[in-house]
Length: 386
Image (tube, rainbow, N blue to C red; front, side, top):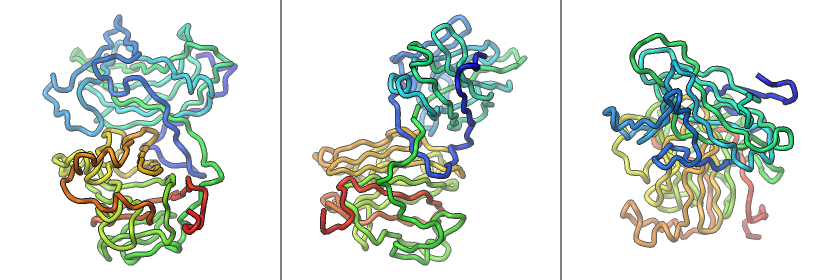
């Protein structure tokens, strides 16, 4: 491994745990991240058996959180690889980027994979420690990408199987939903809306909420109801981290009044355990990151329950964008979304609101929120100036 001339910073993250100060994840477009039939720039090592693999062909349900349809299949004993050119924004900037992917093992052998950056000659510039595959889950690796000025063009992001399996049965590593995001910090315009100690600056049913280990959490056994910010916001970027247990359901109130159901009187961005069996029959507009009743979100980019997710909600005029763990999962124009009626079939008069409160919508489950901070796009702190 050639590492003498390049600074290396690698961390294998269990579920994307947050850092201090809060991290910012800026998405970088990846060609064909879900391995659909159009290859989109991916290169499979045909000589070692790397290929596409359809979950439906093997009788597996496609209604799964971390895989769907075709995925990448890397034979575990062959040292197979699948790679893609590093996108131009990464090559130009360099720096620490978070690589995320859905990972599983197919077959009985112990299977591992590494994630690396290789130059045009196949030399490894930086690589992750081995990652063991098991049941489907989302994995994260931080790699310090070398800038283009150091290695030139032609670098590739490479996944390589590392298993020492001896079984004669077909075994493999399966990959799906690959993403890249630049790891950074907030600009100075972001302001914290939670002091980490108490609910100062928040109103509503405060009996059902409290502070635990520097995070706001729900206490559904004490009380239900919603929590709202004292301040109102019109156009903004809201960044936060959240953690949910299995089967959890909550929501982010956006441009909401102090009273009423935020999903109708304002907007509600869903917070939900997509992988819970009990939610298998939900509509797309009820999944995590969707605008309830209005716009569906992409699935598959949430971490397993019990770990911290990083989310950003950007509301600017009539456009709403939700980014989860460095992937844009919702991006919608509200007027276009309801041009032919709402997906829920119900009236949502709150969509017409220009400003309102942020908050949490209690639905009877324990949820933790931390690193809550907002940047006003309008540039004004006083609602009367907006």
